[in-house]
Length: 570
Ligand code: ADA
Image (cartoon, rainbow, N blue to C red; front, side):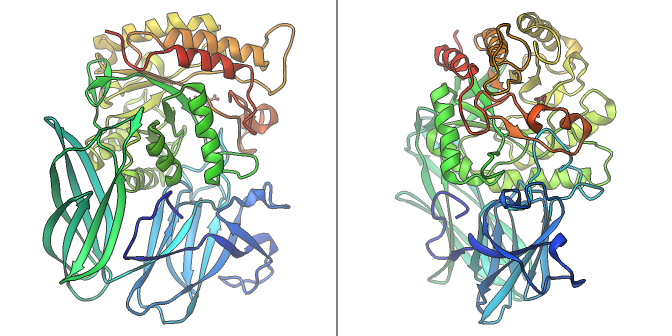
């Protein structure tokens, strides 16, 4: 299942999670486009690095399964995530494809015969010219069908997406809804759209969708007397969009909404009109047993750790997360900064613009309704200190705002007082590592004050009087390594750095959020000289190790987070 809950009562959906036939390019001896034979069966979703013999495999592989054809419905194959490039074939014919591991995508295949049909997905996780975002990096790019897959049977006109935006309206709430319909047939299709939320029902009227086209329908549910969504009371409501052909209900799509507003006012971030301080962690989707394909149970373990640590916030560095993780955040009331896929990428790469635009668009469109997502982010530690880099930041941040005007936008900068892009964001965010890459832990407080002085002056070119999040800080610790003197890489030194930095950031009146780098130790790529130099080929800045065993710093962070107030003091 792509989500933690059912989305369709009318549309037929079959999960394609389970055993698929599998073969790698290395194992093939033929020269055909699709493999005549497969060597083993693998369980989807998973990362192939978890398979014996493929721990470091970088290249191509093919997955094969079967679906049933249906003459009256198109088969809509929905992939939660394939890492990182996919080409899909049905009965030997190419029907679609996708780049990037971290966003969901679909392929709609009409006209299948009423029999068993073969689905083959060619997957490539290699680095090179074709890939601007998946590059050797400080986190691992795995290979495989790494998130759940479904086949959905959709009628000629079907509901492609629903976008719902809550807005406070006096004492009540309003929900502004856009429904996107698509028509895969060669005939115009006229349908009625109805929205249902609890006992309320709203008819959005009849529309005609042209052959092969998409069409949006808008409407609002007003005067809703519903409890708000908040971290301590994360109330969720099901919004059910229905499509009728005359009297007949022919398609549907349910999603969950939470009634909350996120805004900024001067140097504060507001949740439902009240100032809030975000305190939490950066978290990668990574686990030694699952790679990036974490099952729900492992996600829940991470969320339990975050709750125990006293966090109210998680940053999905540096890419969109599995929708089930976001569902769990909605359910638990954890606030999320979700960012499109980019960690220090090269803006001059020939595919950069098209690939970052797709990652950004797909992230917002597929994750639009999650109440937990409080901020959209992008372009972690990219070139934000040159005019050319500023133009790229402007482009991506503008796209984020166009796709969703209801959430503040941000990016994590490491360019300090040289940054040129502070005027482009709703919330300013900085990554800073006092006591690790340079300086001492005690530099945290004076360095922050220097930065704030610059930020709230005309020199920052538009950053003044905006909220600030310290989006990364921390230190590496090899699990179990302690010394009589707390030196770099010891658990004691990591705890010292986090003690000093949290002390400086958590209760500072001009800091609205702080996210420790990072929750758990993660695997990084072996490619790239710099990354290879990291001990254990891992980023060791987790407060728990890769198996989620706490380091000394765990208790340090917990003490600070638990003592910190949720709201900004007056
Ligand atoms: C960065 C970056 C992270 C990670 C971290 C570190 O600033 O955003 O992805 O690489 O630093 O550990 O150095």
